[in-house]
Length: 91
Image (cartoon, rainbow, N blue to C red; front, top):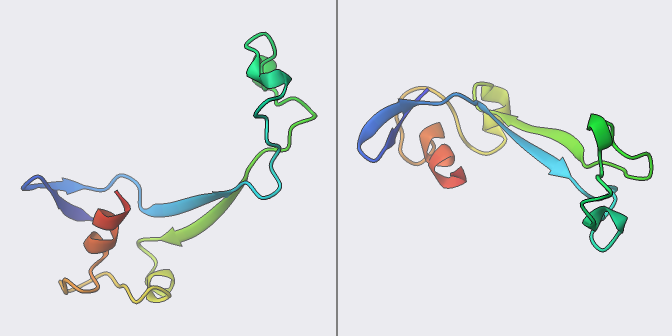
């Protein structure tokens, strides 16, 4: 989907907004993980005492049903509801 950036037409490479919930995640601030000698994921494996943030898919910009939840759509240009407006606001 094209959009304007600094007067040039560009193409989106990502067409989905994603969220991460930290409601059940471990807050590692002020813990042993603040010390570089204690990595939170040694050798790429998350320490068992840490609960990670949870991925939540939010809205796919190509899915008209999902866009309709926000009063948006793909298609004919309408500045008040065009998806490019949403993407501009999300930058």
